[in-house]
Image (cartoon, rainbow, N blue to C red; front, side, top):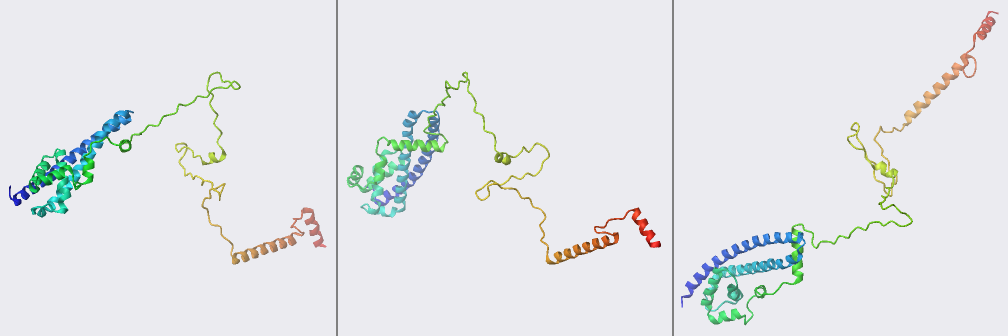
Length: 298
């Protein structure tokens, strides 16, 4: 049997190679799954639901395998970080789950580097330890690893969820809604139309709708148009108020000045009325002037 230090060194090298290989395979599987999803969206768009339901199981299986490889990658990183604990003869309790999960799952993968790391772990801890891990007698293998390695058809709910997610991602309407056929109007005996459909007359536009309508911009000279505000419960008939000159309220000084001007005008009118010889300022004619002139000579 090889010394423990040399086996641990080989395990360390294989763990590093396994991590790199696992990451590469995950990236490759993700790219392939993306192409498969795009092809699945085309099937859904063409209405081939049965074919899509069968083929989507391959995508589900590929995703489960990718998740398994990710878990194994984490276990390899854990063993690499605690490589010093592998120097002991017996397996440390903190590493038992990771070691037995790798021994249990490695033969079911296509990662050669991981399978070589498994052989070194079996060589390190013995055949009895390896048999317990392969059969999972003590239940130390991670439950999620065991679950992802089970070969069973996916649930119908999971299949529908995958199809809905693929359709949503690629903008496909699925499941497609059944379009209801339009029912043609059948003429009654009371209102025959001679076999021709009669168009319903459109209701005339109301005054409010005409006021809200805006004329085309390309007709006539360009001018600024202001749309009236929409009616509300507080203002049922809104009106546009354009800004204008501010309304000046007369002050006390202006009111007194106006009163004095009005009084002077009234006094001037009375004076003119007296001079013209009558109320109301009537102008005398030529005969009246001649009589007044004759009276002055006497």
